Image (cartoon, helix red, strand yellow):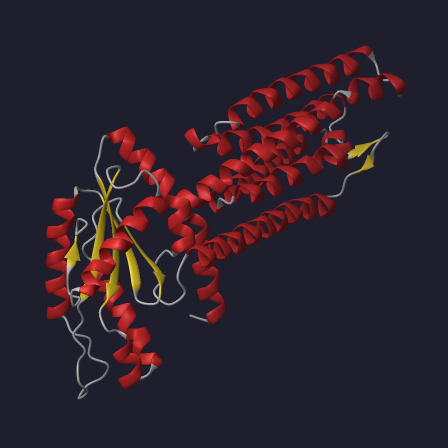
Amino acid sequence: MHASEIRIRDTLQRLLVPPDELMRELGASGELLVARVRAALSALILLLPLVAAATGAGTRRVLLALGVAVLANGMAMLWLALARHARRWPWLPYATGAWDVTLTSAALALLALEDPVAGLANPVAWCFYLIAIWFTALRNNGRLTLFVGALAIAQYTLLLAVLLAAAPAHDALLSPEHGAVGMGGQAWRLLLLVIATGLAATVVHRMQRLVELSGHDGLTGLPNRSWLLQRMPHVFAAARNAGASLTLVLLDIDRFKRVNDEAGAEVGDRALRHIAATMSGVLATDEHLARIGGQEFVLVLQCPVGSAWERLDRLRRDLAERPFLPERGSDAFAFTFSAGLAAWPHDGGNTSALLGCADRRLKQAKATGGNRIAARDA
């Protein structure tokens, strides 16, 4: 498989992965922004009945334009109200995206009732397909972008097929008011929808990568301090709702500098990845491991302090029993660590307080020679 094919496959896989907590939060703020823009655009649609009346349109067309404008504004206000609580409803972007596309298709279909060519030749109404697709880039959800793009392409293709099938053969795509509509032009419109979907998906992919790189450690792939500070309020809220216990662990690898001094920085990097992989093995569902700098790590465990101490003691033994071997024939490095534990909410109700408490206890463990776990103040 060529490198370009691999990149395309990896990009599609990344786009189809459900967004994580951070991306969902960013997407919720994007949904609110989209709802506000939609409300503003819907207000402009109220001009349609006036334009129709000013251009001499019949009463039927004016009333039709008025009905569309009222419906669009009513739904825009509903979506705006729901968007203020978008974090609760992961289905909301799909519903609003489908609405934006379907409203555009409905407008084109209504135009086609009086003149079939008008439904295919009106550039203003058709451009709302593009707006609906581009809106999805603000939600940071690749699956949503592909869904809305595919829906727009499918609905417009269906509209085109129905109008072609219904039109008399002798004047299939010809109108005195709008002129002729060629199949080449319609093919270009469908291609533009495909291109718009691809561009929006590219923007989403780049945003996901930027958020991932800003919130994750480039060496180990673990979340970093920034991610931890953003994530912890949600962890506290979930634990509060479930009545669960939390223990924050600040952990430091003892005398790690010797690896860099004896074997070099590259081996030190590989050793950190070995340590991170070993520690990740102890995590249960909804537990987290982050690297916050150098050889310092934070674990967020869903258990009381006593259980956390027992699990860390097992991890300490596992790490010592799994030495890191830089290469065949070289000396292996066996690691130990020191750790400080802080219980939520007893030792602190926020991330800063828990980190401060855990750091104080970590220093106690280091001061007594390392390879210790401190769960309370001396």
